[in-house]
Structure formats: C-alpha cells, structure tokens
Image 1 (cartoon, rainbow, N blue to C red):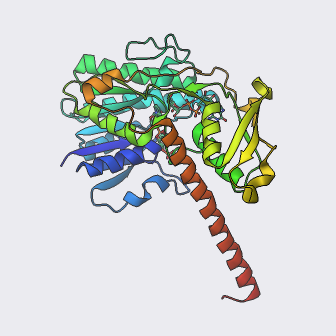
Image 2 (cartoon, protein in one colour):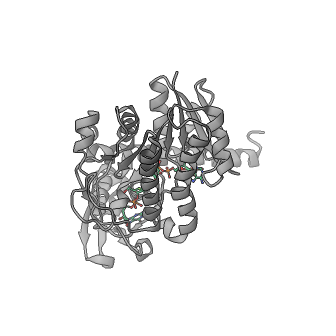
Image 3 (cartoon, rainbow, N blue to C red):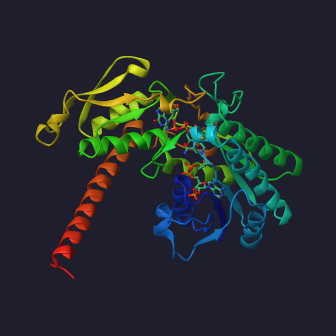
Length: 372
Ligand code: NAP
Ligand code: G4F
C-alpha cells in the first residue's frame, strides 16, 4: 500500500485529493494545524477511515515537518499548504513568504534529512499567478513569469526551489502550474464562491446586494475535483516535469456573475462602467417568490476589493498535460461548474435557514415550557 502525505489537507484541494487517493488504495496522511475552532468541515467525512491519518504540524515550523515526514515515511508528498489568498498576501506579505516560499524548502529538506530523497516523489502546488502581469496569452510551460503580488512572488521561490532540488539532488519533485479551480468546497472569500453564495442568499431573501472588485478580470476556471487527478498523474509520470493544468477557456468575473445569478433564477443586466458599473435584476424565474427584486441593483463595485496590482488575463494551454498525462481538460464545462456551485449554495442557504428556524422554535418552546 502506497503512503501519501498531504499538507493543506483541510483545504479545498486537500479534501478532494484525499478522497481520490483513498479511492486509489493509498494510505493517506495529512498535516493539520491546531485551531481553537473546528476547521475540518471538508474532511470530517474521512476521519475514522482506517487509511486516513492526521498529524499536527505547521509549514512555518521546521521541526514539526521533519517529525511528520520521518514518522510517515511517505512515497509521495503533495505540498498544498499555503496562505492561498492573493489579496490577503498584500496585508500579510511576510507570513505569506514564510509559508508559501520557505515552507516549500522545509518540505524538500525534511525529505533529505529523513534520507528519502531517492524514494519520495513530491508535488508542489504552483500557480498561474506566476504569470502575473502576463507576457503572452495563452500561457504554457515556457511562458515567462512576471509575479504580480506578494503571494505570487513567494510561490515563485517555491517553483524554483523545486526545480533546484530536482537538478541538484536528482529528486523526483514537480510543479503543477494550476490555473484557478473552484468547487462547492471553495473558500468563501474567493470570487466564485463569494458570487454563488451571494446569488443564493439574494434569491432566498437573505442578502440585498453583492459588492465586487474588478469585474473585467479574466480567469481560466476549472473544477477542483478534475484538477486533483492531475496532481496524482504528474507524480506517476516516468520523469519529473512541470505541467500547466487549465481548461483553455477564459471568462470574466462579470460573466461568472451573470451565469451564477441565472442559475439562481435571476437575470442580470449591466449598466455603467468601472467603479460605477451595476448589475440590475431584469427578470426573475418566479415572480411570486422574488418578483420584488426586478429593477433592483443586486451587484455593485466596491474599490475595497481592488488590489494594488491585479492579474487580469489568465488563460492556460493544457496541451502538454493532455499529450503526456492523457488528462482531459474538458471534463467539467464552465457552465456545469457554475451550476453545480449555485445548486450547492441554494441548498446550503435553505438548510441553514431551516436549521435556524428549528433553533428558534426550540428556544421559544423551552422558554414557554413546551419542551424541557
Ligand atoms: P485552501 O483551500 O486555501 O487551503 C489551504 C490549506 O493550507 C489549508 O488546509 C490550510 O489549513 C493550509 N495551511 C495554510 N497555512 C498553513 C500553515 N502555516 N501550516 C500548515 N497548513 C497551512 O487552498 P486550495 O484552493 O485548496 O489550494 C491548494 C494549494 O494550491 C495552495 O497552495 C494554493 O496556493 C495552490 N493553488 C490553488 C489554486 C486554486 O485555484 N484553488 C490554483 C493554483 C494553486 P487551515 O485549514 O488550517 O487554514
Ligand atoms: O477568486 P480570486 O480571489 O482568485 P485569484 O486571485 O485568481 O487566486 C486564486 O487562484 C490562483 C490561481 O491563479 C491561486 F494561486 C490562488 O491561491 C487562488 O486560489 O480572484 C480572481 C479575480 C481577481 O482578478 C480579483 O481581482 O477576481 C477579482 N475579483 C473581483 N472582485 C475579486 C473580487 N476577487 C475576490 N476574491 N473578491 C472580490 O470581491
């Protein structure tokens, strides 16, 4: 039985990758951080599985990383842990560098210190943010990098230190240069999930308006579940190489918004430009339930969500991954992705409401002595 160690196992990708690897017959180990509140929602269903094990550690703590690597003796490491929010990296650049840059070095060195360098294969979660202020469109493995945020600069170190250890010590370590990938488990402050949750809340009368930043930003959005398969394929390849993983299609934030509201039953039309642009409700699928929304402004721009430097034109060319790994970039379309995220969030908001009503009724019944 192969052993995989996943850093960032509680994150979007870590949770899907865990499921995928357990399905492939792996024993899966993950590094988690201690927290005063429960943060394991995405992997709760895996806890207790006989081939799923968690270890405390932190990417900023060298000793804990060496200890876990030494104890687990993994065949494969997937280094997914990161301060992964680009906008946050402008507020916490030093922390981001420690985790996203030096953290990668800690993993590579831990493997060497534990004498596993000729045995253990390592996947590094590199990113399309490396292309930053893009120098060509579409971007492939040979496109020059121009990182455009503290996050991207930290990830650039991670990218190069992986290459360096491959060349210097002949280690099997690879970069997956993944373009944006989203899902029902996406963190709630990334733009896609922020939009799908807001569309669901607005449709169900739980939110009035959605405030966004740059609506014209272009992204190549794929489905996270499809992308974790590629991480595994990269480590099964006969030689260590770096791969771009993308769909080859791009859309603006505005288009994502339009589709998400459409699947929530709300048709948007756009008026104005730049910071004055607004998304107005033109029609609804059910006038009884949400007819009052027609004519209302549901989306507005807030410069609070502008970034000091923003990456605005990402489009990946996945030809190498298609050719050498047999990966299919068209498995889940943009429309399917938006639809499944909205459906998930429509159900989530409805069930949160139902749970809140039960709590409310219970409090009332307790107060009136109806239940004891
Ligand atoms: P995510 O949901 O934000 O998950 C990040 C994970 O890293 C979480 O498990 C988090 O743990 C963990 N982490 C953060 N700081 C840590 C630390 N100091 N020590 C240990 N663990 C720490 O990110 P994701 O979307 O799954 O992305 C996975 C990786 O791919 C990241 O490296 C990201 O930068 C990269 N990437 C993502 C995309 C994308 O579109 N999703 C594209 C390209 C590259 P907590 O739960 O404790 O916070
Ligand atoms: O959803 P985002 O925050 O993702 P971003 O910055 O592309 O980063 C994600 O993808 C990277 C891969 O390219 C990963 F490496 C990284 O870890 C992360 O997963 O923003 C996407 C775009 C940006 O141009 C942003 O300016 O959407 C624009 N945007 C417009 N309004 C917004 C908002 N972004 C966020 N988060 N919130 C807004 O209100």
